Length: 144
Image (tube, rainbow, N blue to C red):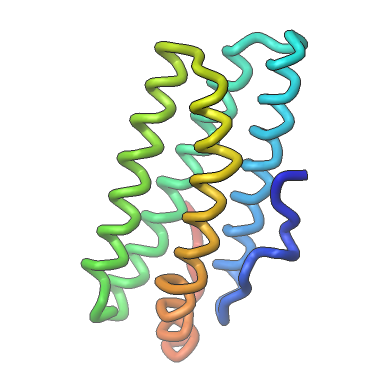
């Protein structure tokens, strides 16, 4: 298992913790698929599908948080949204590069190292503060 969901930093808003756990499970599935692909057990298209699912989850997650931040007029909204925009742009670029080159090493580094490190850091900093504001306003984050 790449990420033990119990190791993910917790924030004050239960729905945010649930969403982060869902993403950990998606990381774990991608990790499992990369192993299977390296043993020639699955086609690359199976990873493509899971990457698309992961990207859609990230987009919905960020959209839901951003909607709630705007609803409560969260002061650091532009900074938090900027972090979302940056990681989405990198993810889209890396996924496209994988689909064009099938560079397993590059995708593995991104999925197994870069993104989990970003997620933990983002939760510990941006999401922790944001969740506190959501909790004070009695708000949850619901993905549509």
